[in-house]
Image (cartoon, rainbow, N blue to C red; front, side, top):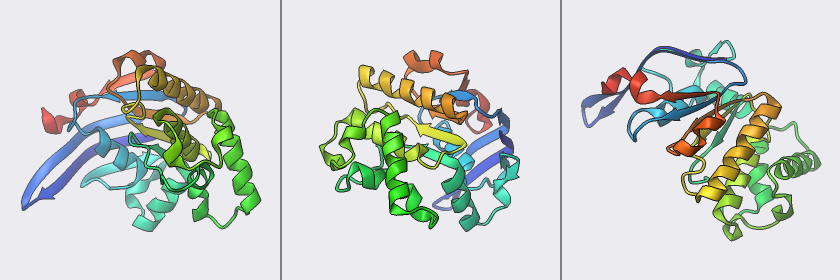
Length: 223
């Protein structure tokens, strides 16, 4: 469960205070698949950063799995994110000179509880789920855009997260590859009962989700 209440997110821009996000309340139940839409600057990425604990609100609370993450220290939020959040970026955010395997096991490197064999086995499993296991030893720079996004999805789920956040995961892909990636993502989340939250500008994909939320209608800062 994700619950945001009485949120205000302010930034200081050269001495001027900017109110970027103001939400009265937002609830997303466990296992739900939700798409957020809205123009650039409407607060979508700020919302993701709040849910993941990358930032804390100026005011208000963010609860994830009944834990108020706004009360945690930064190091505790980092650990929470590593254990519970899978984050997928529009620009893939992969290391091009690393192999597919090296990129995918990166989240596991923050834990000392995995042997090399265990990490490799987990990587092979998630790469099989996204249909790219044959590329495991290739460098990421040799892959197509669709293949890179599959690697990014594999990396995001290797820790079996409760929540998957995808920030325009198909924004850099053509229609065919974008649709395939979204089908893979929704299928994996459903099988794992993970909560899936996606930012998208692709209206053709919206019928894949349980709920579509226009953040511009919720964000009182831009009204």
